[in-house]
Image 1 (cartoon, rainbow, N blue to C red):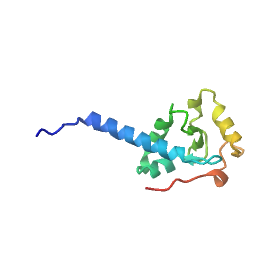
Image 2: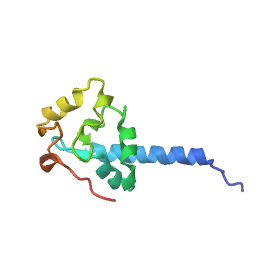
Image 3: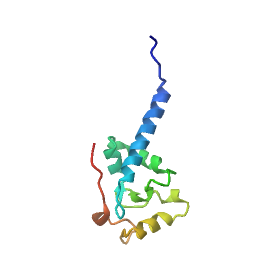
Image 4: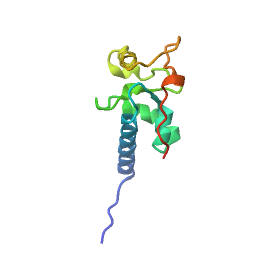
Amino acid sequence: MKKKIIRTEEKKSKAKIDFFNKVYKVTKKIPFGKVSTYGDIAEACGIRSSARTVGWALNGCRPDIPAHRVVNRFGALTGKIHFGDPNLMEELLRNEGIEFDEKGCVRLDKHLWKPKQK
C-alpha cells in the first residue's frame, strides 16, 4: 500500500485554512454590543502568538462574520481600512451601542468579550 505524500506547502495551506476557519467560528460568537481582540481570538484558537494572522483571516472575510467586532489590544480600530469606507467599522460598532474614549478607542472596560480558551 502506497502512502500519500503531502508536500510541505499543501500542509501549510491546510493548516492556514483550518486556522482561518477557527477564527471565523470564534468571531461569530462575539455578542452584539461586545468586541474581542485579535490576541484573544488567536489564544482561543490555540495559538496566542498569531494575533496578526487573525487580522489576515478577517481581512475580506464573508459578510456573516462580524469582523467589525474585532479590535486591537488597546481598543483601536486597526482593521477599519478593510471596510471600504474608513468610518464604517466605527459606525457599525456605535450602532451596537459600543462606546469610545477620547482617543477613538473602544471602551474595553465596558465592551470586551473574551472567548473561552481551548
